[in-house]
Length: 129
Image 1 (cartoon, one colour):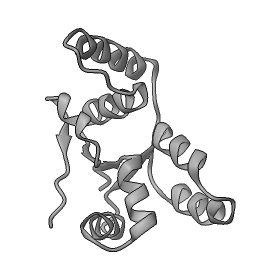
Image 2 (cartoon, rainbow, N blue to C red; image 1 turned 120 degrees about the vertical axis):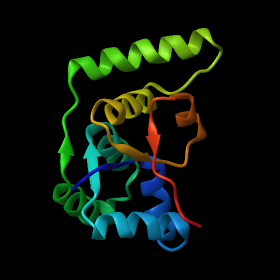
Image 3 (cartoon, helix red, strand yellow; image 1 turned 180 degrees about the horizontal axis):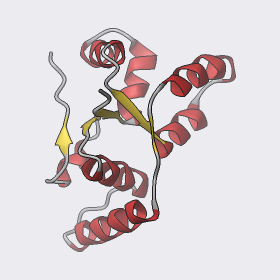
């Protein structure tokens, strides 16, 4: 059952280093078929991939369950980001959307970015060291 949304930051660590705590974690989640993909993460990965890696990445992403983004996800993210900004916390819109998608679908989020900690309702997947 796919129940973990892997953020771009975790994917980058997995692709660049492969081994280590994060790489091992992503590999295990892939083997257990627990990883789900959303459009924003796919966009960020495709934007940064090297031309010779594009086919391998595309094949992997095609194999993952895909989470559709709806208008209500953009609205929830915008409202939450505005609330955080009023408190002096600025978070990229893309990460706000990823966080709110995870919350709505009751997924855990695997990410390296600490700004996801500002979403108290978000459940984070913890990497074993």
